[in-house]
Image 1 (cartoon, rainbow, N blue to C red):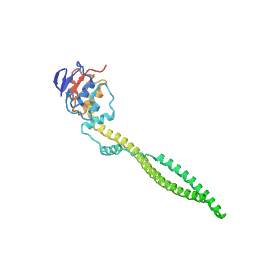
Image 2: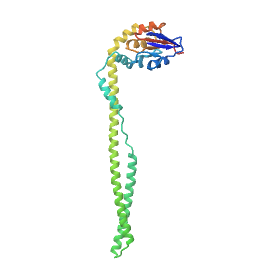
Image 3: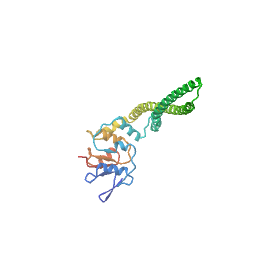
Image 4: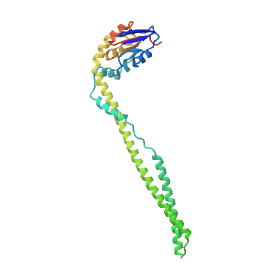
Length: 263
């Protein structure tokens, strides 16, 4: 790798910036920035796990699995996991307007009831007048107008019912899809645990050998994880047991940048 710091250009796989005004965060940003002041290979996925070593840490299954993937190991469930994650990433359609459609249908239904009562009332008046041998043009006109208005209202109810039922069907489909997604999410979590367990089994012996090869103490597990991972971009060490960058690079079998530990 090549670094340009304080007007100097340095080329080495073991750089020591502990006396420079450079923080661990500065170096990590430079590593991940193709146009930064540090030229080096592009970081791979495992760099997110082991790229910054700034404190002792407990190494869990997910971290060991990341190291195993960096070495080319895989698990039979990976393809299924990829399919599940693709399905879970697809957006779920939203059904809008169901409540408004239900309220509109209720309002229109009440209006139809009221108009039907008016038609019946006016129809009774027309019949009574007819039985008495009388004719009232105003009552007859009002009756005809009420019948027409009732017909229009009933037509609106039919249309509103169709809209409401369509939205209900769509909402049911969305609800079923959400329930399906919950089942898929459960399966994804189960398969992820299964995948990680398989990957951990693949790398466990290598990791244990790495633990014996790195300095002891509280940093041992983190350093062993870095050593067993296959990295291209440099590891950034802020603190730790190494006095020299060359010793760190040799021990971790990776390019290394030392920076001052956080206070």
